[in-house]
Amino acid sequence: MRKILLFFVLTIVVVSCQPKEEPKGQLQPQQQPYTGQQAPMVNMQMDQEIRILEGAVKSDPRNVGAWIKLGNIFMDSARFNEAVNAYSKALEIDGKNVDVCVDMGTCYRNSGRADKAVEEYRKALKINPNHLNGRKNLGVVLAFDLKDKQGAIKEFEKYLQLAPNAPDAVQVKQEIENLKIK
Image (cartoon, rainbow, N blue to C red):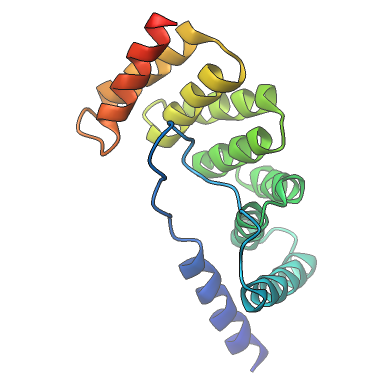
């Protein structure tokens, strides 16, 4: 019975962590922080999922999937330091997981640690130079947090080379032009 319940909850976690639509306006990294506007029932559900996942990693500390899901829930609820801890555990097990590196970079950025975000994005891009979200997120942090216009332009141009027809290609091209004028 417990295994069935755990499977059901983990299925819900996977479904709830599906990508969200990117907001319009200023170019943003792939992941968006939690706004604190969730309904109490959703918060209770997240707390329950966290408890179940924490139990799973306590009983099996090498459960990389549970560490990643735990990191995702923490990131979605703006608990960025806890997300970084969970993602770090996942990377200790699977150090080549590019998506986890990118998500960890986003958590670092959202917790005010742009230098660590850049480090994680570059680590991800060293593993997979064609990772679109890593490339774009690196450009965003370089442009808006570190004010490295040339570095940001380079990353955005590489992003467009990799995905010339990306849904946000026009926005990225406009940002490149804005950075060249400033």
